[in-house]
Image (cartoon, rainbow, N blue to C red; front, side, top):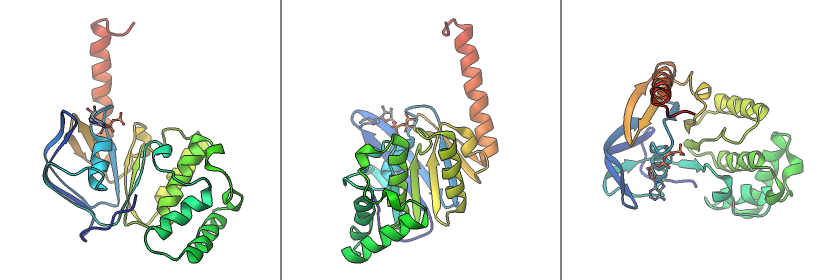
Length: 233
Ligand SMILES: Nc1ncnc2c1ncn2[C@@H]1O[C@H](COP(=O)(O)OP(=O)(O)OP(=O)(O)O)[C@@H](O)[C@H]1O
């Protein structure tokens, strides 16, 4: 889902309030996300996907504003993103959607797959790929359209270890700004900036190793407290 909007470096949220359903997810949230690698961590329901939906324009804030330029979102579930029956068609659509001629888009999609040693994937039916492979298709469909900022919502969730390592290397080599949510702290531990979201608020914001350490300590502490109350059988 590419988005072209007001220009500027990175992403800005100014005094944003977001309500989804009956729930107030963010209230007065202000952030400037300009670093090239930013991690988002926090418990289930903390607001990571909601923040992505705001940044890419899928949800509009009830108050405040979001300023983002050339943003592409990779959904947590690839089936929410993939529209076309074959891998090549999905990649071609990324290009035609932003105005590229069909013939040129087809050539570029095939070249792109060839460049990754994946020519055999071009005509493959997306429905016959594994979940992790479909996720890879989603990432390629975003990368081919070269958005300024990539939003990756739990991209490691269903990947095997070699695929995780491959994705981490791709992220490392990418020249784009990447904002990535994950429950696997190792993947953002070395990021220059990590935000810990807690019930829609930024609980900590700083270098990956500091923020991941603080979150991991907090999780351990809560688990100990629950066990002490007899919460863990
Ligand atoms: N479609 C929706 N309508 C209303 N509320 C929603 C909707 N989706 C999520 N929420 C609520 O928004 C809050 C934040 O959810 P969100 O999906 O952003 O969290 P998350 O940090 O991405 O969680 P996870 O780690 O489980 O993916 C939660 O309290 C959730 O109940």
